[in-house]
Length: 148
Image (cartoon, helix red, strand yellow):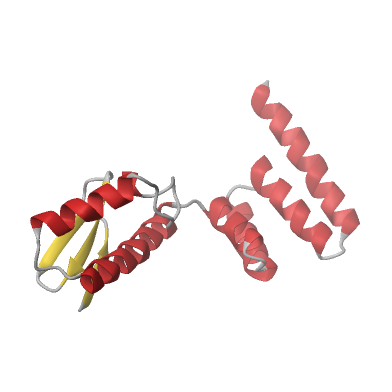
């Protein structure tokens, strides 16, 4: 029953396919850029969906909710910057993936203070304190350049 997920043109909605239906789920039903539903918006939306399409069972609504979360995750991943992706890996305790993403970003943007700050945290966690402090110092200097 599961189908395609993603976003069709309008940034205020994500779409979910359920059978032959395409359902536009408002992004306002989610807490910011997460896959967590925000109340009461999400409940209102799914209640409205069930009222408009009374043949949808509770089970079908639960499937649509899961598909909406999967769709939102795919949209988040497409929209996030490489530094945001590295930060997500870092928070998800995937330091190797985080370092790979941040290194890739720094090849193109070597003076990005946010990326250097995150690289410093990762290096510190890896026990490479000298390199970490160099990254922190570079991040600070590039950050001050931005302000000038």
